[in-house]
Length: 247
Image 1: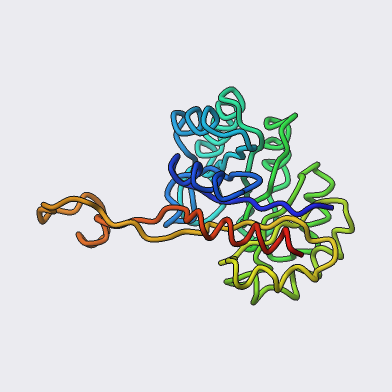
Image 2: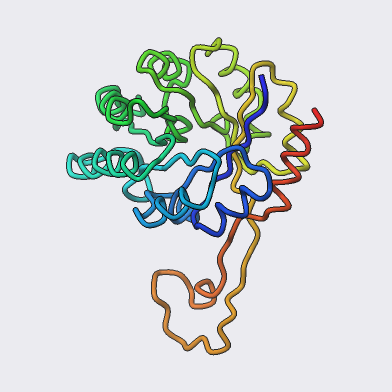
């Protein structure tokens, strides 16, 4: 099977750069510095209008854990409906119980609400207690793929687990590797038989062009942090795609 390179983007500019670099698919979100949350309706609409490649939308109402209140989950379901109406090509989300097991009921609801769009269970999987049992459960719910770094900080550190997950999944559900993948390390995963999807943020730092920075910060970060951010680096995307193409 051909390889798929998915790039995680939290801005329209990043999505366009990822597409120019040769990404096969975009995961669109907001605020990657906190792991990503649901993007705005305007961002979904504009990115879809700009790109020809599939755009999957992350549904996550806040940072931190994946144990959601009833109100938060109501928002998530409505965000899925709105993303579909705006032309999303897939939905990315996940939910857990307090004991670290997959929230089967809520995941089923999200899969059904997302249908007929494919549903990716995101890195909540990396926080679950029993990954092999989770694979079985998610496959049975009709989840299309699982995003994972092998329950380790990076894909390279989790390589052995990723290989174990792919083998256990046995084609019933896709496993997509993530975790600081770049052109110089993505090749280390290509020997995993059955692993065909890869996910990366592929970012570079962008500095503000403001000459006057004042002295008041707008959020919880230090003032200097508010004058730099990260965007997708087209060259990193192209580099990873070249590695996949050559392999």
